[in-house]
Image (cartoon, rainbow, N blue to C red):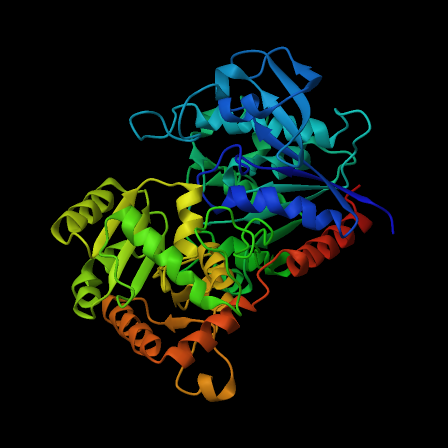
Length: 485
């Protein structure tokens, strides 16, 4: 089988820079694709954390002037990945969040920062890197959305292009006056091109002009074709439905493995679930919760946003407490929600703990400790936290939307007898239905045999990248076989 070459273009990659699940996907997919005969090189911006991780990097291409200063393209191997890094200090040498300034607002030059990334990707696609001629370019989210447009309007032979949407809510819209600055011709600014409600839509550009579109779960692929889920892009997506595919995400099941996880106090497997109790006690003590084996412990590892349903969870806290349960929360996001959870934790010491921020080690310990993980999202393209929960026997309690619906099987009344069910689903997404789901979880947990069987089925779920990688490889090969002239 001919080895296929893919250029993956993304704004973040774990563990070098991460704000969400995009980084995890971009990091884990190349190794899975390699087993399918697909070679991947990943292009990312040269943020400080990325540059610091590079050792023995080689400068393989230069840009004398790229949106305000010179830039170099570096080739390096880091974090198990073959990386191409756009080293442009005037664009990327900034501390903290890769998208937001110290005031929490987007960097004023984000349009140029990510146009530069796309322009670099387009030059690689057209042969700028000796010995690497990609057959396919995969652009991830709006930050790479201009790549298909730049290749489309340049004309001539080019690789096939795939636009992968991790979250349609983030679209990247910028003033039309930037059209020439970012390398697009005047005729690109039209309804069939990059124009989007009087702006240049970076994500819209990719959706309109890529050869194929993928998103991160089959149910989300169907939801974004509707006015309710399409975020203003449903009409375009319905028009292009014949090239849209939903491919479920996976997780790195070697990194997320309760049998070998160094972040756990006590490692375990499905045959030794009682060992989770040591982790639960350690987490309770670490977070200042009452160290009580008899208390049902819910967990949350999430961005604190309305999309994630965190306002509903705040409203449901009295019901959770009334069931005698505890809550351990790890996350950051909207300041009002951060403040509200911090205040609630202060009011209910011993029962509620809120860690505002994110820590990889704590996230692992929580997955190996909590009895159930709450994911009450209003919409969820795929979600990775529930996949980790399944792997660790932290029974996921999820809204029946997007990838949550595709990955968790509801343990309804018939599930125990049928030997099915890996978690709890609820719909529609409301405070009342979340409260009912919380009550269902506590009731199931009180039946130790039923709960242990539910955990074991959850842990037997295939949450790795093997099957998704096969789907991606097949799509890439089909596209490469009919490369645009």
